[in-house]
Length: 289
Image: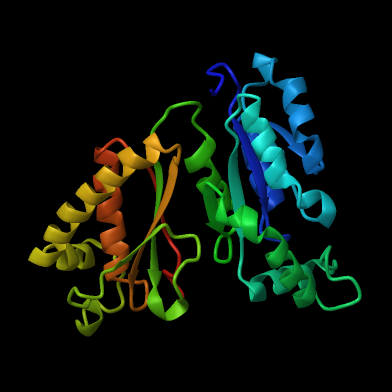
């Protein structure tokens, strides 16, 4: 049985270069007690030490893969923490291979697992190492197209408010031609709606402009879809909370991520807010054309 007085615990991990330190810094700014680079076998002992101290509030533990043998024990450590009455959540930071390569090259630092090989070799080894923990993560954030401020906003949306058992959602617009977001829990395809791109007056605008938004949402199918999908997410949110999952990412896609997906993401997010879901809106591909 979970100790109702136990502090909230989140383990921050993921791919090297994906923004783990930025996420940990954001959590610290929001009042979390942050511990970085502790070997996973020591996590239960750390929790035993700090758990009885209510003044520490919420605890964030950043774990990396530099010691491969230790990292393999992370899943075991999480089980041990739950046996002690804690309910640790896992935040996993992800990014595309080419993005990680650019980040390591720009910092002129080697990947911690590349050895005598290339950065890509280290990334491949790390992906295999983190496969299991990624599959069981409570929240995955793909930082490939996020700057520091956007990543901080996503962490804030998920963790800034203490304690309340309610769903927190990120609604992200994207363009299918740039690829589906890897951290999406739901992928919504709104390419069934008429495309403002073919209207010469609307083409240079985006879904954030009122004329484009009205063009998209005034379609009967758009309103019907928003009604139905909002109800679906409400139903899902109740189940997620019951099962202990508090974070969800809804990716809304059109061809280029400029018109339909942006407008529909904004309106879907507004519906979620009306349903008392804490919601962050991001437009991944807006401005890429």
